[in-house]
Image (spheres, rainbow, N blue to C red):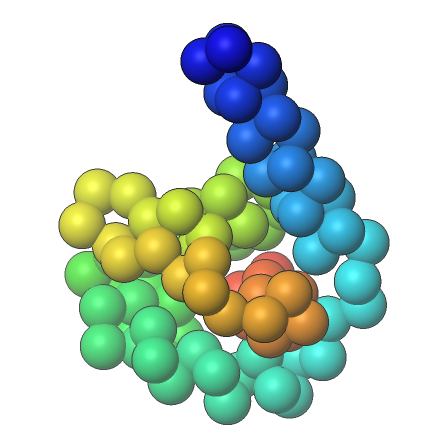
Amino acid sequence: MLMLLISLFACATENRENDILALSGDVANGEALFATCSGCHGADGAGDENIQGEGGRGALETILYGEDGMPAYEGWADQDLADVLAYVETL
């Protein structure tokens, strides 16, 4: 039973990631939302936690679930996550 629940969660998680990656991100809105991130990443993404050149599924997973002290933003709307990801990919 536990393995079934784990499999269902993994499938739902992957489906959400795929759904977000399929969205067209609004870079301007992503830039506005990135203000939340700039305290650590800097306005240009080259701060204490340099994220310049990051993108794709790996960056999305880090944004969604957090990593190494970065908080998770899985509570954000899918479109907002796509927007931030689109902006980060421009850094």
